[in-house]
Length: 495
Image 1 (cartoon, one colour):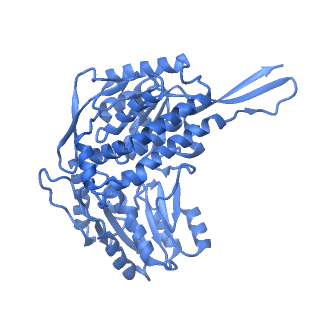
Image 2 (cartoon, rainbow, N blue to C red):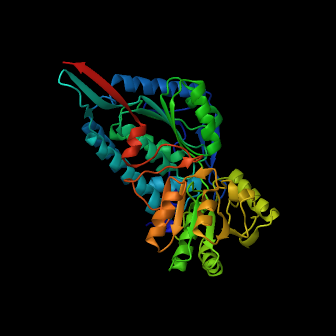
């Protein structure tokens, strides 16, 4: 790990990409419009980035369609595609410090988290997806001897991918790696709040040998570039990570256009259940703090609802407050910083309003509170914890995407499960218990796509990631991600 001074030195020499990437080259937006990309730590201008709209989407779709139909990538032998993607991964690894720095400056994530989690996870996802693709076999149906029925998987064509701002590199890689490995041509629209690393990795993809037009990147806003992609008849599939509200809009756009398939990883309001048979309360409290204050709480699987058995609530709360105080906001380029700024002023104000609403509705403030904004000083916010919360309160029901935790109690397992499931979301959940039977029993009953027992957020590329209910459909990572980006074809042959 570099020192703070070394990261500062690297920052001074960093060249940031700021144009769209279409057909293997950086280009300005057709309109000439740009938007400001701001460093949330000090509100300084990082770059003025091309603001793409429908005209740029048309160009990118044309490039993607041309590359796909030519077969230069879609019909390439899977083993050769694998080698190119592996070379790309090697190039990304060579530039890993640069990529980590870009996302820290662009989004406010701590540099330690980028170096230790986001970059390694992204590389692993790319290499794993590449390694899988020449091991995906077809099938032969059990027909009679006069016929042969072949069942094969084929790439879909042009895939549009819209990613969020909270894990810029990692969320991009979770989607583009399996989509490219399967042979598709893709158009990526990264969030306008953190678009820079996506542009850089596209440039490195070309250097690795990914053909022109196969990987295109359109920075821009959701209501312009994102909407145009969702409505475009030349896009066959759309994959999205972001809010449930936008996810619903994208489904409508798909229906209004060509009924493209839409894969959605949407919002979350994950519960954390701590039972009274948990024999390491300190570890559980640290885990609960990690589950909400990691990445400033800007995490889709953040456990922002904490339910603690009433018998251990007081002792648990004391440990929780101690653990939360370790998350001191600071310069994300300092390797010792665990908590950087929120992504921008809009998010800062949104989270502040939720904190104020919790106070107004009668929740008891245990730590933190409404922060005071100072112009030019960044969008920093301390961990905030409320007790005496209930499910009638707005901040308990709605996704906040900030470091705000609601603590509630329960008396029985039945009550804990009912409270956990009393949400429109179903992305993740955590259980802390030393009763193995309870762990199995409760995890089955939780309405959630993922459950962690005596931990939170653990996993690797071998396991799927995704939710149920208003948290979306489909899965990122693992073999199941490849299912989203391939189509099944049946070929019946009369012998």
